[in-house]
Length: 165
Image 1 (spheres, helix red, strand yellow):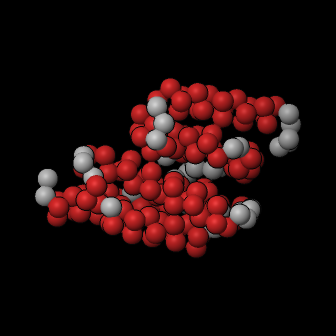
Image 2 (cartoon, one colour):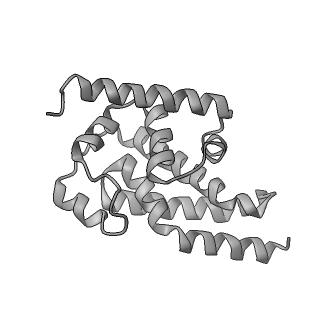
């Protein structure tokens, strides 16, 4: 595939899935401006590394990986916690009704270790397949399945303890 074709596929992917990428970044930083900055930085990184794409069919998962890593880098630099009010969440949820309907669920997700939270968000909120998630987080499929199981178990424990009544 020609260089211009790969660029076109990348631009199309980012354009068609911009809300998904933004929502993913937002799930990490809980701030609209920071999430937009992360997506913008990710697009820049993607454009700079576009020549490394071997399979244009995997551009979406490749870019998800960039967004996840850029979000994690941002969090490492910021080391801050920001909680979101329900009005902001309602504004964000206009695109997808079922995403983060329950603030208690969001708070429980925020309490999970990042390795579990990332996999749960990608699986249940971004609707990615296990093998796509494995590619994004650079882990094998069995590791992703184990982390998904453990993350869900931690969520169940949190809710069973009545912490969010």
